[in-house]
Image (tube, rainbow, N blue to C red; front, side):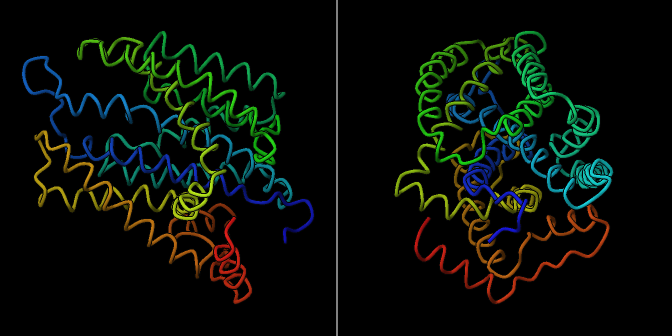
Length: 341
């Protein structure tokens, strides 16, 4: 039961966030270990090339969009609980930036610090804009970046704004009622994503760094994955996947940072650095996902928030937030997962 005025947690989006973490992990492994992308002068390793087309740039946009959406949801909650919601959000973003700065020492390509900076510079000031202005700015930034300066972190501001706009338009409330709209977007996105993926695959490796093929294909692939996974969650098999991925998504901060430690610890044993062992990458990713899925599920049986999520929340509200679940909460979780979604 949710208190009056408090929006219920959107469990589908937690599952999608967990799904996005899995894809991001694969790319992070070869970036963290500095694996070779080529097998000769300008010749891309075929397995790496195929993995790039399937995962690189596809899951990061989903994660960024969900961050902007979560920012909007949290801002609403902060407005209900504080007279200075923007101060609360500002403190939350600064805390994220500190975590990102520490994480950056071990993973120079990490996203938390840029997320915090863009959040402070773009999201916080934009939160008061009309929803149509948010949508327009988000579309212009998201579409304009790939065709001008490429992708990567340059996509973050636009995707943040689109996530913020999605909540303001009420697109994430009652996702179950938007099935046909999601299906229409999926049907349109799939052929576009396939065509863009072929374009990316056929683009010479050197040109991928400066051209629009990779970021455009990544965005379209992200849209197809996002809508397709939302539809998949409506199936019986999808419900099983949701029960595995949802806890991971709720502990996204803890899992994202802990994955870096697990990859760096495993690298000396697997010998990934300066290699083309992409089969081992998939094996390591599967192992880390399995460990984090079990860990997240067990942790959230007893606690409301993941370890880093709890610290982040305490700093955000500047007080000690209760974390241990009550007996009634643990019983409700057992009933929920026992009966299915």
